[in-house]
Amino acid sequence: MTAMHPERIERRWRGSKPAVGRPVLFALMLIVAALGMLVLLVAGPNLALPLAVGCAASLMALVAIAWAVAGPRL
Image (cartoon, rainbow, N blue to C red):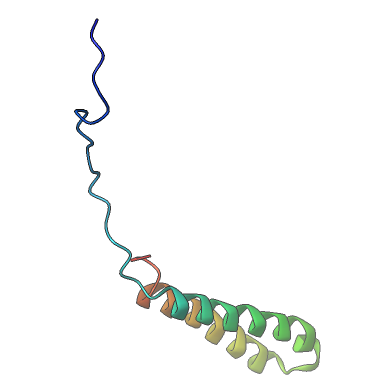
C-alpha cells in the first residue's frame, strides 16, 4: 500500500453555486415582516377583522417577495 503526498491528491471541486443573492435585502425584508407580525399580534385584538386580515396577508406577501427576490440564490 502506498501513501500519496497531499500535494498530489486531486481535490474535486463541487459544482457549488456562488452566493449571488442579496442577503442584506433578504434579512431586512424578513425583519420587517417579523416586526410587523409582532405588532399585529399585540395590536390585533383592537383592529377590525378586515384590517387585521389585510395586514397579515400583506406581511405574508412580503415574506414571499423576499424569498422570490433574494432567497433562493443565497
